[in-house]
Structures are given as C-alpha cells and as structure tokens.
Image (cartoon, rainbow, N blue to C red; front, side, top):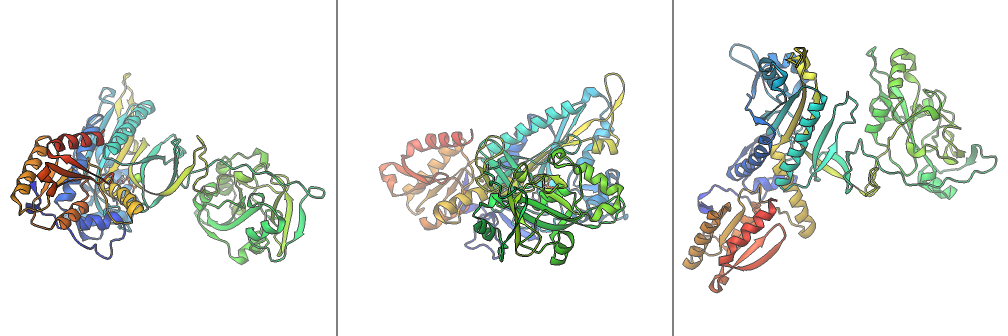
Length: 618
Ligand SMILES: Nc1ncnc2c1ncn2[C@@H]1O[C@H](COP(=O)(O)OP(=O)(O)O)[C@@H](O)[C@H]1O
Ligand SMILES: [Mg+2]
C-alpha cells in the first residue's frame, strides 16, 4: 500500500520563474522532476512511476513486432567515423576521451551500433527480416534546451531498426511500426496526428511523424477530419474558386494611374475588386549553392493571389535557394525595376526562363533549373520568378506596373509574362478545406512524439552489412529506423490536459490519462483524526489494490482542502473523498478527466472505479 505520509512527493506552491510552458511548471510543482543543469533533469519517484508505465506500454507493443536489445550509450569514435557521422553530427554530439586518449562519444542515436551487430552476425536471407529495438538514454547537445522535458540534452528514447531483404519487406516492417505506434499512443491516452514528413523525393524513402497539438510545440502542422495531415511547409488546401474580372478596352494590359495606392487593401478598394483578383508580389534575395561552391545571391520573386501569404520554406524548396531575405529598395530597382507597393511581373528584364508557361508543371522544372545553374554560372543572377498555382489559368488580374503610382489591369499570366516555374508557395490558413476530403483544416503548433523512417541502404551500404540471398548472391539489407520520445509522451499528455483545463476554467491544472499517471486513484481521508474515516479509507484502499487498481492513500494529517489541491497537482485522474457522508455509507468520486463528482455507496466504489479504468484503457 502506498501511503502519502511515507512517500517523497515534494510539491511546490509556486513554479520557478524561468519555467514557461505548463508541463514544465507542473512537473516541477508536482514533484515529478528536478533540474540539475541546462536540459538535464532528475526524475523523482512520481516522475519515474509515470515514465515506467509509459515504457511498459511501449515494451508490450514493441514485443509484438520485435526483440529488445540494450546498446551502450558510450560509443568509440571509430564506428561513427565509418558512417561519416563523427563529423556530420557536429556540435550536437557530446564527445569525450578515455584515459588512453581514445575518442568516444555519448550516442545520440544507434544506427551505427545496430548496423555493426547486423554486419557481424547476419549471414543469410533466412535470418531476415529482423526488428530490433531498445529503450535507452540518448544524449544530444541541443543548441536550445528548453521547456522542461520537451527538449532536453539527456532523454529516453525507444529506438528501433529493421533489416529486410528488399523494399517490399521494408514496407511491411514500416507498416508494423506504424500500427505499433498508433497502439502505443492510443494506450497512452494521447490525441495524436500522423504527418507525412517526407515527399518521397529521396529514392522512395518515406517518413512519418507522430504529432500532438500543443502551443508548447515547435512545429507547425495542419490536419483535418478526413485524415489529411502535413507540416506547414508541405500543407496545401483546396483553392477557393474566384470569378475573373471582365476585360476592359482591348483586353490587353492597361496602365492605370493609382496615386498613393501601395497596399493590397488600397488597390482593391480603388478598383472595386477582391484581393483574389489582384496579384501579390513578394521579392527576396536567396543563396543558391552551386557545384563551383560560389554561393551567389539570387533574386527570387514570388507572385501569388492577393489574399494569400508566401511560405518561405516552400519558396526556398521551389527555387532551390536558402536563406531568403526581403530585397532592399536598391535590389528592387535593380532586379524588378519598380518601387515597393507597385511591383509586378510585366517587364522584369532577366527572368530565368524554362520554356512556355503551358509546358511547366508544378514542382517539375526544379531539377532542370538546378541543371541550368550548374552548367552556366552566369545564369546565377537572373531572376527566378515563381508563380503560385492560385494564379495559374487566371485572367484579367490587377498588379503593380513597376512604376510609382501605377498599376496594370487585364494582366493574364502566360500571355503577359512567363514565370520560371509554377509551384505551391503559399501558406494555408485555418479553416481552409483540405485537398483530400475537403474537411476544414486545423492549423497549430505541435510536438513530435515519434518518428518512423525508411532509411534505405545508407548504413548497411557504408558499413558493409551483407547477407546471402537464396541463390547465394551477396545482397545488402534495406533498413528502417523508428523513434519514440518517452518523456515527450508524458509532457504532451500534460500539455494537452492543461490546455483543456485552461480553456474550461482558466486554471493551471492537468489530469493524466490513467494508463500513464503515477497512480490511478488517490483515496483521500479528509480527516485522519476521525478513526472511522481512517479505518474506512484503509479498507477501501486495500480493496482497490486487491482489485488491481494502482492506489495512493492520502493518510496525511492535513486539512482536506490542502489534500485535494495536492491530489490535483500530482495529476492523478480519480480521487475518492472519505468524509462526512460515510455515516450514510457514501463516498465521493471525483473524476478529474470529466470534471464530474458522484456520490457512491462505499461498497460499490471498487467495482465502479475498476469499470471506469477498464473503459479508459480500451
Ligand atoms: N532533445 C530531445 N528531448 C526530448 N525528446 C527528444 C529530443 N530529441 C528527440 N526527441 C524524441 O525522440 C524521437 C526520435 O528522435 P529523432 O526523430 O531522431 O529526433 P529529431 O526529430 O529531433 O531529429 C522524437 O520523435 C522525439 O519524440
Ligand atoms: Mg524526428
């Protein structure tokens, strides 16, 4: 029997001033963790109980598809040199020397170690497939450790690796992990979305991130009820239809005097049009890396619908650039020829061209574009003009005329100007419809709790893992790697719950899903000086424990109010109050997940609670 009076649960009234996100404050206040250094934490008994419950769930699900290992955290440099990651990992790797001066590191991940085992031990196709996993401490010298356990320098990871004969086998291993991860996160009580993290550009590789929406997260994602989910850099939405304007005059671009109308709002009001009938121009300078290793600044000009916003990551990917920054006034004059507020596509002298607009397919010309740059360094300074698909096939648009106080109307892309390429470069907005099922998109910050990835041959190839196939021919196994952040499951659960409490009652509280809470129920004796209450509490706690419930008996000589607050603070989902109603054979059950308090006959409590817990774990 766990008695609060005997346990070490150092709760705090206040969180330290430097704790910002809810989970950081609450984990400290609840006595789950204490900080030792930047991104380094001790786990106290409550934190450890919760993490143990998480690892048990992870282990149970992983044992269905693979076998558990435990690999060393201390690694000789040689193995990392073989894969090329001794230098590749840069400052993120903790490095040290032994007494003989040999270089070692604290492992950030274990592809190298696991591949060395495969290389030394696997000989035949008959030994494949293999799925090997471990739950172990990882070390990463994160540039910005922060937010409590969300981004730390020492953390627990479940990492798994698969070895298969061919791509079809890898597909199977990948699917098994996808299913196992869904089972794990569901059992942990998390509301998660699965985001396609890679477009499949790298030789059929595939990657999915498992994300939980939270303001404390560092990624931006979009998802919808039809199952669509993507990082903001990838997310797209259905275009809303726009009725094009009727042409004026002879239908060709017509110069219009628009004094002082520099903003989209002013221009649309002046012409009496919608923003979607206007062309927005956003001009950048970006760096293009080149084979010749000179990195010239290249003008990149984006044209998109007046009601859309540019996404710089998408634009970088489309134009093959990095480090985009807005053009200065001088650069605008040089590369576009117009002042800010009056920029437009007509008359940009040196557009890098790639055939006709009709020949361009979204995304496609990129490879060609890269080729041009590599072959002909002089091309580097020509302007890359990117047109968003929201303007493809449109006509009679309004845009800047590259002259102060003038705009054009009747502008038709393809006829009046030819972009270098057409690519999706816009940000989606909350509530727009997803491209699959047309359900409204939810847009928000999220934290990554897991990641599954088709590695391919990278490590098996470079480190020389080979097996003989049925015909005796040597082949290289194909690999996958799969990670789960154990602490992130706990923090994501706290953040999600805290957000629900904040929305409902504007208080900083949380209640953990029963499966990962340090205890499932607190039996709270409201006054331990009353022998009947004390005895009833002891008896009830024992009955619950005998029924397999993980129970904490609060037998401390404290005021009931203090005990209720503490029970809330440690995030236990159910509380039973043994108080005055005991005289009528009644106790109170507080369900913190639903906020409902019910009076129950003390004899029925155990059965009732067991049923609630069973339902919560389905
Ligand atoms: N610094 C960290 N602190 C806590 N958990 C982490 C940290 N870095 C990674 N994780 C967890 O480990 C999982 C696997 O890591 P990985 O995908 O290699 O990390 P990353 O996406 O940061 O490169 C992540 O999905 C995340 O849940
Ligand atoms: Mg990742």
